[in-house]
Length: 343
Ligand SMILES: [Zn+2]
Image 1 (tube, rainbow, N blue to C red):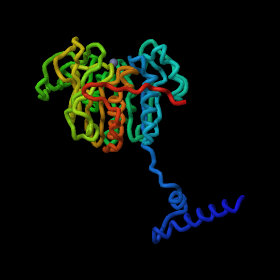
Image 2: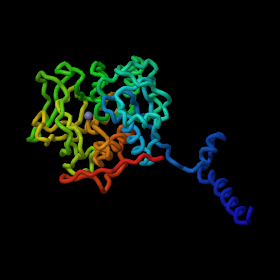
Image 3: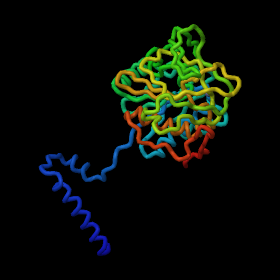
Image 4: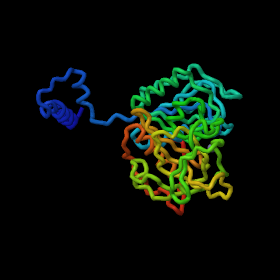
């Protein structure tokens, strides 16, 4: 050991031993003292992505994309919890399955109920669903656990086809506010949309729920400019190639539409501005709902990434610190970042 080392250790000891002086009358236990001596680093937010059954072939990859985006902010530590029986993963995306570190799973021809799907929601600041259309029902105890977790102030994020899941689970539909497909009709609640003139409509007329034209780049229009998630975004910005979900319907209680999408493909199912980014209050809990994110190209959109990250942070904490990046899309141009899996 050099003299310099002794000097550094001496300095460190001085620094550590002087700490209690700045806090008069410390009555801490030895454990607390140890914690006080650790570098002051904010604990990361804990996020859980749940997945396993989704009609979108990309799901094993998109789960890892979202995990990596979240971890790259330095704010989140992300776990994945998956059904033992998986469904819908594409041949090209199967190699991503093992990278989630969730152990072995079994692909099934149809979505299969997993009685052992019991995530510990309460251990997390926010839960993100990457389930999709036709996902088998979760065990009743797990449904109840999510309801209790959310009522007590949890955070939940619904991504794209997660709003297709569980049409018969009323509390889930209250959480997402609006859903599509799964034989949803007027019995599930109103259509909610904006007209071309900018009027918000709740429409109880009968009819099916869920439609979209071909994937294309379409404009997103902000409807709530002062919400922490959207604050600072341009009033209109372009998606990358994505699906513009339409005719969503649901309980729509305590729902705020942050932004809408307008299908400009020439084959739009409606002539409306459809809800794309939403927030819902559920008990003391907060939900962020993005209808965007159909495939890898959609998810590489800087608009998707930014709204997703800010939405997850908001659902977890009620605040947003993640900035709008300089490469955020504009009204004229979409922007994207090619995804590279971190080794
Ligand atoms: Zn889709």
